[in-house]
Image (tube, rainbow, N blue to C red; front, side, top):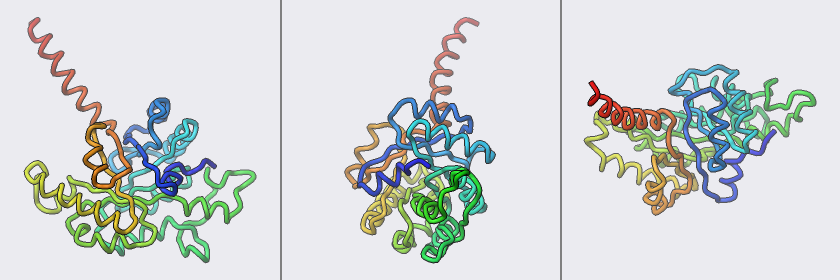
Length: 264
């Protein structure tokens, strides 16, 4: 199977750029890949409907365009979806809504290979990752599973209180701050507490880097990157399919509505 591009970049200390999609139509993944600017796509199934067929098709489209794949999963059914996505070919998993180090360890356990050295819970499924016939040898497959990049959202007040312990867990590759859920867990509207949640995000970045964990940050424009680069961040997610469409339809639709309103 294909090289895990994000793992390669992490191992080499190189920066990475991804973007978020919610559409399962693989043409969207192909369009992202055709630009040549992105290392991977993040399929946000926490927000979107999908089937197992969709996971395989997105993985194929990404591989054909020399990109990696990430999937963002819900908390409650994370083990099932993560294992299905990995078996389909996804190379990195973003876990949401974790509160403490024990929950993080549990999630890592279910996506680690079931070998004597790994002591994980993920076996040898007859899906894309084993290469079908001839199959990948079990230990080659285990090495590929072991290379899966694991990212954890830090988006609860209690997760920030446990950030040192979370970043100390073996197997945590990356963390990302979630301002909306973090603000909700504090009983805030994020728009009213911008400075406070930005301070928490800076703390997360500082702690992560001190523990050798890479922070990943979502930005909406390239100009937003320098703020995070100055903090030591090298991994970015640029833009979101739904947000991009919403902004376009609001701005351009509103402008055209004003023009045609003068015709009535």
